[in-house]
Image 1: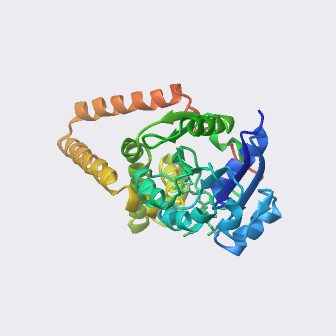
Image 2: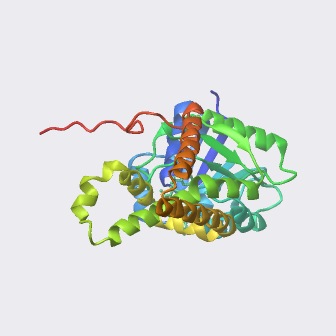
Image 3: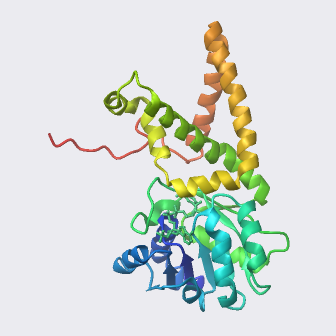
Length: 308
Ligand code: NAP
Protein backbone atom coordinates (compact mmCIF):
# COMPACT_ATOMS: atom_id res chain seq x y z
CA UNK A 1 0.00 0.00 0.00
CA UNK A 2 1.30 3.51 -0.73
CA UNK A 3 1.76 6.07 2.04
CA UNK A 4 -1.47 7.74 3.16
CA UNK A 5 0.27 10.32 5.35
CA UNK A 6 3.58 12.10 4.97
CA UNK A 7 4.28 12.34 8.67
CA UNK A 8 2.48 10.60 11.53
CA UNK A 9 3.16 11.97 15.02
CA UNK A 10 2.48 9.92 18.15
CA UNK A 11 1.90 11.59 21.49
CA UNK A 12 2.48 8.79 23.98
CA UNK A 13 4.61 5.78 23.03
CA UNK A 14 3.01 2.84 24.80
CA UNK A 15 1.33 -0.37 23.67
CA UNK A 16 -1.08 1.18 21.19
CA UNK A 17 1.32 3.72 19.65
CA UNK A 18 4.10 1.15 19.30
CA UNK A 19 1.73 -1.38 17.71
CA UNK A 20 0.54 1.28 15.28
CA UNK A 21 4.14 2.21 14.43
CA UNK A 22 4.99 -1.43 13.63
CA UNK A 23 1.82 -1.86 11.57
CA UNK A 24 2.48 1.42 9.71
CA UNK A 25 5.91 0.13 8.74
CA UNK A 26 4.49 -3.26 7.76
CA UNK A 27 2.08 -1.63 5.32
CA UNK A 28 4.14 1.43 4.33
CA UNK A 29 1.37 3.80 5.39
CA UNK A 30 3.55 6.81 6.25
CA UNK A 31 6.72 8.34 4.82
CA UNK A 32 7.92 9.39 8.24
CA UNK A 33 6.99 8.93 11.92
CA UNK A 34 7.75 11.05 14.95
CA UNK A 35 6.80 10.52 18.56
CA UNK A 36 7.19 11.70 22.10
CA UNK A 37 6.44 10.41 25.58
CA UNK A 38 6.26 12.06 28.96
CA UNK A 39 9.30 10.44 30.55
CA UNK A 40 12.91 10.51 29.33
CA UNK A 41 13.06 6.74 30.07
CA UNK A 42 10.28 5.92 27.59
CA UNK A 43 11.77 8.26 24.99
CA UNK A 44 15.16 6.58 25.42
CA UNK A 45 13.67 3.10 24.91
CA UNK A 46 11.75 4.28 21.84
CA UNK A 47 14.94 5.74 20.37
CA UNK A 48 16.95 2.62 21.21
CA UNK A 49 14.54 0.33 19.36
CA UNK A 50 14.03 2.92 16.56
CA UNK A 51 10.27 2.74 17.07
CA UNK A 52 9.75 5.90 15.01
CA UNK A 53 12.09 7.88 12.75
CA UNK A 54 12.48 10.70 15.23
CA UNK A 55 11.88 10.66 18.98
CA UNK A 56 11.25 14.23 20.15
CA UNK A 57 11.66 15.76 23.60
CA UNK A 58 8.43 17.75 23.36
CA UNK A 59 4.98 17.25 21.89
CA UNK A 60 5.35 20.58 20.07
CA UNK A 61 8.40 19.28 18.18
CA UNK A 62 6.73 15.94 17.46
CA UNK A 63 3.64 17.44 15.77
CA UNK A 64 5.54 20.01 13.67
CA UNK A 65 4.82 19.28 10.00
CA UNK A 66 2.70 16.19 10.76
CA UNK A 67 -0.42 15.58 8.66
CA UNK A 68 -1.68 12.97 11.16
CA UNK A 69 -1.37 13.31 14.94
CA UNK A 70 -2.40 10.35 17.10
CA UNK A 71 -3.00 10.95 20.81
CA UNK A 72 -2.02 7.71 22.57
CA UNK A 73 -2.05 8.79 26.22
CA UNK A 74 -4.47 7.80 29.00
CA UNK A 75 -7.89 9.41 28.67
CA UNK A 76 -7.29 11.69 31.65
CA UNK A 77 -4.19 13.17 29.99
CA UNK A 78 -5.82 14.08 26.66
CA UNK A 79 -6.86 17.66 27.56
CA UNK A 80 -3.39 18.68 28.68
CA UNK A 81 -1.78 17.17 25.58
CA UNK A 82 -4.29 18.88 23.25
CA UNK A 83 -3.61 22.23 24.90
CA UNK A 84 0.14 21.72 24.47
CA UNK A 85 0.11 20.75 20.78
CA UNK A 86 -2.62 23.12 19.53
CA UNK A 87 -0.41 26.11 18.64
CA UNK A 88 2.04 23.89 16.73
CA UNK A 89 -0.33 21.99 14.44
CA UNK A 90 0.16 22.17 10.66
CA UNK A 91 -2.61 23.53 8.43
CA UNK A 92 -5.20 20.85 7.55
CA UNK A 93 -3.79 18.23 9.96
CA UNK A 94 -5.97 15.33 11.09
CA UNK A 95 -5.99 14.75 14.84
CA UNK A 96 -7.17 11.43 16.13
CA UNK A 97 -6.83 9.52 19.39
CA UNK A 98 -7.08 5.92 20.57
CA UNK A 99 -8.72 6.52 23.94
CA UNK A 100 -11.06 3.86 25.31
CA UNK A 101 -13.78 6.44 26.07
CA UNK A 102 -15.01 8.82 23.40
CA UNK A 103 -17.38 11.55 24.65
CA UNK A 104 -15.05 12.60 27.49
CA UNK A 105 -12.12 12.77 25.06
CA UNK A 106 -14.11 14.93 22.64
CA UNK A 107 -15.06 17.28 25.50
CA UNK A 108 -11.43 17.42 26.65
CA UNK A 109 -9.71 17.84 23.28
CA UNK A 110 -12.02 19.66 20.85
CA UNK A 111 -12.09 23.05 22.63
CA UNK A 112 -8.30 23.37 22.30
CA UNK A 113 -7.98 22.63 18.58
CA UNK A 114 -7.69 25.30 15.88
CA UNK A 115 -10.36 25.48 13.13
CA UNK A 116 -7.92 24.27 10.48
CA UNK A 117 -7.47 20.87 12.21
CA UNK A 118 -9.78 17.92 11.48
CA UNK A 119 -10.56 16.09 14.72
CA UNK A 120 -11.75 12.51 14.21
CA UNK A 121 -11.68 10.51 17.46
CA UNK A 122 -11.07 6.77 17.30
CA UNK A 123 -10.79 3.64 19.40
CA UNK A 124 -9.12 0.41 18.26
CA UNK A 125 -10.76 -2.51 20.07
CA UNK A 126 -7.52 -4.37 20.54
CA UNK A 127 -5.08 -4.54 23.38
CA UNK A 128 -3.17 -6.65 25.83
CA UNK A 129 -2.38 -6.30 29.52
CA UNK A 130 1.12 -5.05 28.65
CA UNK A 131 2.27 -1.44 28.48
CA UNK A 132 5.14 0.61 27.14
CA UNK A 133 7.06 1.05 23.89
CA UNK A 134 8.45 -2.50 23.83
CA UNK A 135 5.03 -4.13 24.15
CA UNK A 136 3.70 -3.32 20.67
CA UNK A 137 3.43 -5.69 17.72
CA UNK A 138 2.28 -5.18 14.13
CA UNK A 139 -0.51 -7.77 14.23
CA UNK A 140 -2.39 -6.26 17.19
CA UNK A 141 -5.14 -4.73 15.04
CA UNK A 142 -5.50 -7.52 12.48
CA UNK A 143 -9.19 -8.37 12.07
CA UNK A 144 -10.10 -6.27 15.12
CA UNK A 145 -12.51 -3.36 14.99
CA UNK A 146 -11.57 0.27 15.10
CA UNK A 147 -14.50 2.56 15.93
CA UNK A 148 -14.30 6.13 14.66
CA UNK A 149 -16.66 8.70 16.19
CA UNK A 150 -16.54 11.69 13.80
CA UNK A 151 -18.37 14.75 15.09
CA UNK A 152 -21.21 16.15 12.97
CA UNK A 153 -19.85 17.99 9.96
CA UNK A 154 -16.48 16.19 10.04
CA UNK A 155 -14.52 16.59 6.81
CA UNK A 156 -15.47 13.61 4.57
CA UNK A 157 -12.04 13.45 2.90
CA UNK A 158 -10.21 13.41 6.26
CA UNK A 159 -12.59 10.71 7.53
CA UNK A 160 -12.13 8.60 4.40
CA UNK A 161 -8.34 8.86 4.64
CA UNK A 162 -8.29 7.91 8.33
CA UNK A 163 -10.61 4.96 7.65
CA UNK A 164 -8.31 3.72 4.89
CA UNK A 165 -5.37 4.16 7.27
CA UNK A 166 -6.98 1.93 9.93
CA UNK A 167 -7.84 -0.69 7.31
CA UNK A 168 -4.18 -0.55 6.26
CA UNK A 169 -3.25 -1.31 9.87
CA UNK A 170 -5.32 -4.49 9.56
CA UNK A 171 -8.50 -3.36 11.32
CA UNK A 172 -12.14 -3.24 10.26
CA UNK A 173 -13.66 0.21 10.62
CA UNK A 174 -17.06 1.16 12.03
CA UNK A 175 -18.54 4.60 12.61
CA UNK A 176 -20.61 5.45 15.70
CA UNK A 177 -21.63 8.47 17.68
CA UNK A 178 -19.61 8.93 20.85
CA UNK A 179 -22.35 8.29 23.46
CA UNK A 180 -23.32 5.03 21.76
CA UNK A 181 -19.66 3.96 21.62
CA UNK A 182 -19.38 4.59 25.36
CA UNK A 183 -22.45 2.46 26.09
CA UNK A 184 -21.32 -0.40 23.83
CA UNK A 185 -17.90 -0.41 25.45
CA UNK A 186 -19.37 -0.27 28.94
CA UNK A 187 -21.03 -3.61 28.10
CA UNK A 188 -18.23 -5.27 26.16
CA UNK A 189 -15.12 -4.01 27.92
CA UNK A 190 -15.41 -1.61 30.84
CA UNK A 191 -17.80 -3.53 33.09
CA UNK A 192 -16.10 -6.90 32.37
CA UNK A 193 -12.81 -5.33 33.44
CA UNK A 194 -14.37 -4.09 36.66
CA UNK A 195 -15.77 -7.56 37.36
CA UNK A 196 -12.35 -9.10 36.73
CA UNK A 197 -10.71 -6.60 39.08
CA UNK A 198 -13.32 -7.45 41.71
CA UNK A 199 -12.98 -11.22 41.33
CA UNK A 200 -9.20 -11.09 41.65
CA UNK A 201 -9.58 -8.75 44.61
CA UNK A 202 -12.01 -11.20 46.26
CA UNK A 203 -9.63 -14.13 45.79
CA UNK A 204 -6.88 -12.03 47.26
CA UNK A 205 -9.05 -11.35 50.31
CA UNK A 206 -10.14 -14.94 50.91
CA UNK A 207 -8.20 -16.45 53.73
CA UNK A 208 -9.57 -19.99 53.50
CA UNK A 209 -7.93 -20.55 50.09
CA UNK A 210 -4.20 -20.09 50.14
CA UNK A 211 -2.35 -17.99 47.58
CA UNK A 212 -0.54 -21.07 46.30
CA UNK A 213 -3.86 -22.87 45.73
CA UNK A 214 -5.24 -19.89 43.82
CA UNK A 215 -2.19 -19.87 41.56
CA UNK A 216 -1.98 -23.65 41.18
CA UNK A 217 -5.62 -24.13 40.17
CA UNK A 218 -6.07 -20.86 38.28
CA UNK A 219 -6.51 -22.48 34.84
CA UNK A 220 -10.06 -23.40 35.94
CA UNK A 221 -11.23 -19.88 35.01
CA UNK A 222 -9.57 -17.51 37.44
CA UNK A 223 -6.50 -17.21 35.20
CA UNK A 224 -8.49 -15.32 32.57
CA UNK A 225 -9.69 -12.84 35.17
CA UNK A 226 -6.11 -12.30 36.35
CA UNK A 227 -4.95 -11.48 32.82
CA UNK A 228 -7.60 -8.77 32.51
CA UNK A 229 -6.99 -7.55 36.06
CA UNK A 230 -3.29 -7.07 35.27
CA UNK A 231 -4.14 -4.24 32.83
CA UNK A 232 -2.63 -0.81 33.32
CA UNK A 233 -4.04 0.82 36.50
CA UNK A 234 -3.80 4.41 35.20
CA UNK A 235 -5.54 3.62 31.93
CA UNK A 236 -8.39 1.81 33.70
CA UNK A 237 -8.77 4.37 36.45
CA UNK A 238 -9.27 6.97 33.70
CA UNK A 239 -11.74 4.77 31.81
CA UNK A 240 -14.06 4.50 34.82
CA UNK A 241 -13.72 8.16 35.78
CA UNK A 242 -14.58 9.16 32.21
CA UNK A 243 -17.30 6.66 31.31
CA UNK A 244 -19.11 6.95 34.59
CA UNK A 245 -22.77 7.02 33.50
CA UNK A 246 -22.68 4.12 31.04
CA UNK A 247 -20.59 1.94 33.34
CA UNK A 248 -22.87 2.62 36.31
CA UNK A 249 -25.91 1.79 34.18
CA UNK A 250 -24.47 -1.57 33.10
CA UNK A 251 -23.19 -2.33 36.60
CA UNK A 252 -26.72 -1.78 37.92
CA UNK A 253 -28.03 -4.32 35.40
CA UNK A 254 -25.20 -6.69 36.29
CA UNK A 255 -25.98 -6.50 39.99
CA UNK A 256 -29.66 -7.29 39.36
CA UNK A 257 -28.78 -10.35 37.25
CA UNK A 258 -26.26 -11.50 39.85
CA UNK A 259 -28.93 -11.33 42.55
CA UNK A 260 -31.32 -13.31 40.33
CA UNK A 261 -28.71 -16.04 39.85
CA UNK A 262 -27.88 -15.97 43.57
CA UNK A 263 -31.55 -16.53 44.37
CA UNK A 264 -31.81 -19.36 41.80
CA UNK A 265 -28.83 -21.12 43.44
CA UNK A 266 -30.32 -20.67 46.92
CA UNK A 267 -33.74 -21.96 45.79
CA UNK A 268 -32.28 -24.81 43.72
CA UNK A 269 -33.86 -23.42 40.53
CA UNK A 270 -31.93 -25.55 38.02
CA UNK A 271 -34.22 -24.60 35.13
CA UNK A 272 -33.38 -20.93 35.49
CA UNK A 273 -29.63 -21.62 35.71
CA UNK A 274 -29.73 -23.96 32.71
CA UNK A 275 -31.72 -21.54 30.56
CA UNK A 276 -29.40 -18.68 31.53
CA UNK A 277 -26.22 -20.61 30.72
CA UNK A 278 -27.68 -21.84 27.42
CA UNK A 279 -28.30 -18.24 26.38
CA UNK A 280 -24.77 -17.15 27.35
CA UNK A 281 -23.23 -20.08 25.51
CA UNK A 282 -24.91 -18.87 22.30
CA UNK A 283 -23.31 -15.44 22.77
CA UNK A 284 -19.89 -17.08 23.01
CA UNK A 285 -20.58 -19.03 19.79
CA UNK A 286 -21.54 -15.78 18.07
CA UNK A 287 -18.20 -14.20 19.04
CA UNK A 288 -16.27 -17.15 17.63
CA UNK A 289 -18.32 -17.17 14.42
CA UNK A 290 -17.58 -13.46 14.00
CA UNK A 291 -13.84 -14.28 14.12
CA UNK A 292 -13.27 -12.27 17.32
CA UNK A 293 -11.91 -15.23 19.30
CA UNK A 294 -10.90 -18.85 18.89
CA UNK A 295 -12.72 -21.86 20.29
CA UNK A 296 -9.44 -23.53 21.29
CA UNK A 297 -9.67 -24.69 24.92
CA UNK A 298 -6.74 -22.41 25.81
CA UNK A 299 -8.20 -19.44 23.86
CA UNK A 300 -5.42 -19.92 21.30
CA UNK A 301 -2.64 -19.21 23.74
CA UNK A 302 0.68 -20.68 22.65
CA UNK A 303 1.42 -23.72 24.78
CA UNK A 304 4.40 -23.20 27.05
CA UNK A 305 6.81 -26.05 26.53
CA UNK A 306 7.81 -27.79 29.70
CA UNK A 307 11.54 -28.22 29.96
CA UNK A 308 11.62 -30.47 32.97
P1 NAP B 1 0.67 2.68 27.79
O1 NAP B 1 1.35 1.53 27.14
O2 NAP B 1 0.62 2.75 29.26
O3 NAP B 1 1.32 4.04 27.23
C1 NAP B 1 0.82 5.31 27.62
C2 NAP B 1 1.71 6.42 27.07
O4 NAP B 1 1.14 7.66 27.50
C3 NAP B 1 3.14 6.39 27.61
O5 NAP B 1 4.03 6.76 26.58
C4 NAP B 1 3.13 7.44 28.70
O6 NAP B 1 4.39 8.07 28.83
C5 NAP B 1 2.14 8.45 28.18
N1 NAP B 1 1.50 9.19 29.28
C6 NAP B 1 0.94 8.67 30.40
N2 NAP B 1 0.44 9.64 31.19
C7 NAP B 1 0.69 10.79 30.55
C8 NAP B 1 0.44 12.15 30.88
N3 NAP B 1 -0.21 12.49 32.01
N4 NAP B 1 0.85 13.09 30.00
C9 NAP B 1 1.50 12.75 28.87
N5 NAP B 1 1.77 11.47 28.52
C10 NAP B 1 1.37 10.52 29.35
O7 NAP B 1 -0.84 2.85 27.30
P2 NAP B 1 -1.64 2.23 26.06
O8 NAP B 1 -2.13 0.88 26.43
O9 NAP B 1 -0.87 2.42 24.80
O10 NAP B 1 -2.93 3.18 26.09
C11 NAP B 1 -2.95 4.44 25.46
C12 NAP B 1 -4.38 4.82 25.14
O11 NAP B 1 -4.96 3.77 24.37
C13 NAP B 1 -5.28 5.01 26.37
O12 NAP B 1 -6.08 6.15 26.19
C14 NAP B 1 -6.14 3.76 26.38
O13 NAP B 1 -7.43 4.04 26.90
C15 NAP B 1 -6.21 3.39 24.90
N6 NAP B 1 -6.39 1.96 24.60
C16 NAP B 1 -5.70 1.01 25.30
C17 NAP B 1 -5.91 -0.33 25.02
C18 NAP B 1 -5.19 -1.41 25.80
O14 NAP B 1 -5.65 -2.54 25.86
N7 NAP B 1 -4.07 -1.12 26.40
C19 NAP B 1 -6.79 -0.70 23.98
C20 NAP B 1 -7.43 0.30 23.26
C21 NAP B 1 -7.23 1.63 23.57
P3 NAP B 1 5.49 7.48 29.85
O15 NAP B 1 5.80 6.08 29.38
O16 NAP B 1 6.63 8.40 29.65
O17 NAP B 1 4.89 7.51 31.21
